[in-house]
Length: 292
Image (cartoon, rainbow, N blue to C red; front, side, top):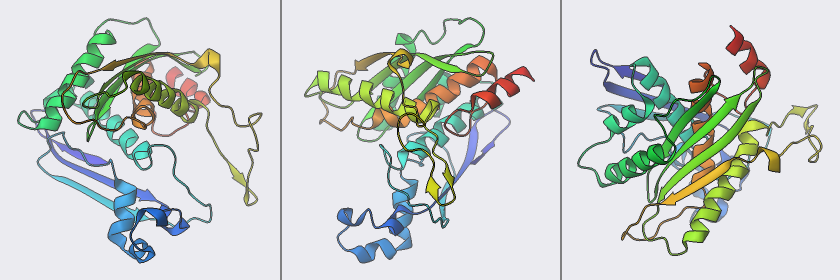
């Protein structure tokens, strides 16, 4: 990812390159296309992999997104929230880096990027401001504690603020998550909250622990004794707020999963000054860099 910034601190250009092993080559996506031949089309393959990497509704004068496939012998299926599990993580962490580069508050930087005359931008502005309000965004925190924010829009607009505490040994504890959702008319508000809470806790396994390694041609992890999932004592307090709306209902099932990684990574930077650019979080590396 790269971007251009002018002397006034405004974004002038944005470039994202997505590099993956195409999931289309694993034949797991044949049920979602009209004919298997479509999966031989480079445009179809790219569209499956870079979904969510676009900067909209952020307003940037020049934007380029491209895709480069890379071959691997390790089979690759989807994870919950599909390509937005990594594209949104990259985008929202990068937005935070740009905010820091220009000396702006990450919330205010995002709000300034939103177009005034765009309907999606207006909805995203509301969820960002409400998430910041409910999470006490501007309230100071003790040393080695921080808040991070992430958002996305589409059929549903959503924002999350994660609050973390980082120990001297690099251990990260996510203590609180505030999530705001504008999904149009919430037909079943309890369902919206349950899906959001569940997705956040599900995704925190990947953020904090979910490392899978391959040796001698096989995956080394076999069960929960060597693949740790989020434990009950690690689960944060989660607050979900639903924006009242008269718009048509839209989906919420994967929103929590796609935002929490970036929100936690940005919170870690706020707490320690160390950027997290890969998951799961490496506590040892975090402790080392925090001490430098």
